[in-house]
Image 1 (cartoon, rainbow, N blue to C red):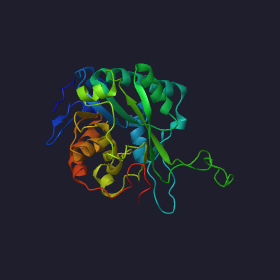
Image 2: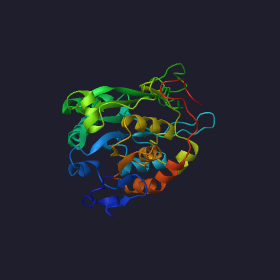
Image 3: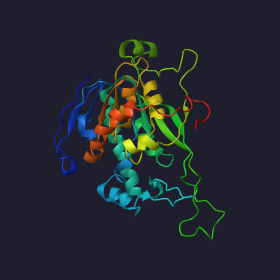
Image 4: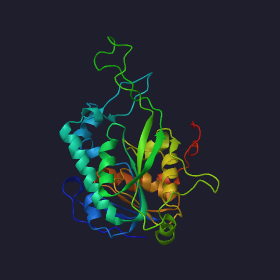
Length: 318
């Protein structure tokens, strides 16, 4: 199992340089992704599964404080509905041109740092949003990654489809944007060395693990939001459910061999999913508070048996 190289100390909340090698088949570090990737050994990673912090805006201390206090900022605090209080979500429609360009630059730097650390044929699964996905996909393609499609996560929540702000009663039959029912995960691959079959033999990468001998992995997954015990264990605003993540990490390594990286691990749900599937992984998180949550959450999420959900590509589960 590869070890985490201890990078430089961070300023602010991360000044303690929290690093940990945990029991099991994963390592985690409280370190910035770019800093860690700058020292990563070439051709040492076999897949990436991550939900990045769309850029820089919503996870700044100022915006996190606004979210926690219910004052909004870039985080939209939806109104309650039928007595149900909805979770905050980032408002990507409020990004300025400057912030969009910063996002594009962020992902260009990420793709540039990531490519050398991956073995040929390694896949990258990256969560995004229909409004900003082009700011992720274009830099990855320009850097030399092959776009291999998208994994569509069908997720039905109480979010979106709202009437005009402060004019709900005047425009009762108008919705500003469609109610969001899906989440795209961009799928990219570092180019193979020669034929896919040769790459599979040498690097154990280049394809995705099938569901069975008769059934391929599909690009459509029905998925309920993370709720109940998972959210109590790992209170992160963009937590993804284990039932979904375990399908993704299971597909990422076609032979179950190699190392999965989550460079923006948050509260550690991807690392827990990999551990539950018996796969080796490395998790990085620059925010010390979320890192501390991850240290406790990963073993608990790993041991959790998620409620049964629909299999890859089939009808929606409960």
